[in-house]
Image (cartoon, rainbow, N blue to C red; front, top):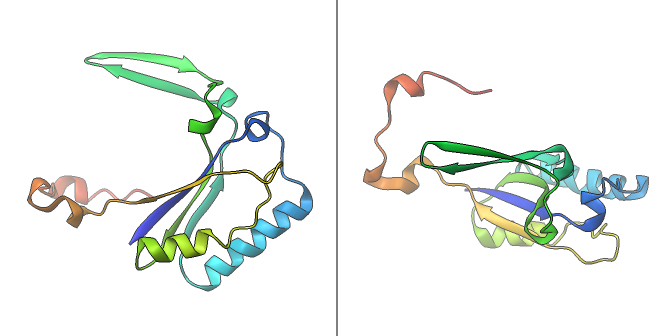
Length: 135
């Protein structure tokens, strides 16, 4: 199973404050552990929402809203994707993450990535689309 591990934003991450060198080093060490265990598929930080946008959909209408966005507790500051055997295994790995957050307070959300087989009979593969490989 693949899981997306989302580090929720803080006021510091939204301000564009970067981690200290020793905090980067701690996260690099942790990510190296994940890689050595063969479970790390991706790990990225995200720029503050001031450098992003949202697109709202309402029927055929599309509305673009430029960042920044105010509800920090609802924003993602970074993510990783890991492949482990269960949610419990993902939780155990996430609990090992170094706490590099400014005041020691943070929230990390773990969500299973849906696989084609999770959709059962509701999903009918399109052979034309399957020919296209996204890299």
